Length: 416
Image (cartoon, rainbow, N blue to C red; front, side, top):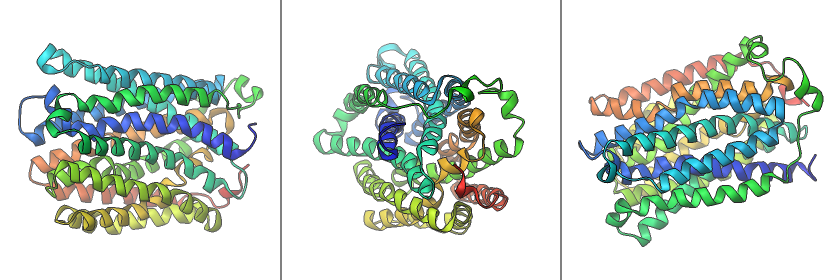
């Protein structure tokens, strides 16, 4: 093992942060480059098309979850995490150098789609391997706290992407950003991946040679012998990710498209919100160590069921950026009950031989169907004049999350 759990977590988190930064750089900058790849239609239709490309990346996640999960179970968590961060770097570099529709016509959106597919494959594998690694280096009594670094660095990636966009809006005109400035975040991501690669090389493996060499290690056949665990992870991911993406990646577009804030103002609001949200994760992770993870999961589900419709309605009608930001922070306070312990809850459901595959593959399936479709579903319903139906859709998925949480066994906090 590494010198301490904290050092091991930080090493793994560096790559996690970079991967999610690259992934969310697309979401946050798409409001600027949408017309460069999809020049036809109004702003909502352009957002819808780029959201579709963003969502297609999620369709690669199950493949990434299977491939990298199997790789992590059979070759080791460290090896899998090294490969995934390199693949993410390649996808970001492609976007940074991507020709636009004006230069190459229909080839431009095709190349953009290809880059997103590579990023989706990478992130699909990153979550399972890093979540498993963090759960295995955590010590009893602090497992919720250590697990919180999974989403803390995930949110940190979002925050970094948002911060880069804010800095661009303060130093470049909107015309400059639309013309070429949107490429900067992707170039930064490609370079940052090299730093993460060096840090991850210092990690030590957490799986054992016995588990890696077991016949059932990393196989779908062994995984499907645990149907409850698979369905639980998919259900948790479906409901949890839908709520998470609603208040994070989609929210910037919601502030622009529904609340009618200027794009730079929306970026500033989300930067402040994500900073607060990131700092919440260790606090709620420690809370779970005291009261139990099952209670936290149930608490999140009830919170999302009761507050999604009123909070989304209030945010959409906000005219003051500070008010909108406080409402989003309020929403994400409840979401933190889930995100802070998401990794550990899912990892605890599987034995070591199929843990990375189980978390990565099942998480990716749930995310591909529900998380990846969040923006597209919301924007489509808005374009049809039924935006509020999306809020009820999120509420319904939160109800499913609650039903699964109620079936969680007690005493999982003591897993070693």
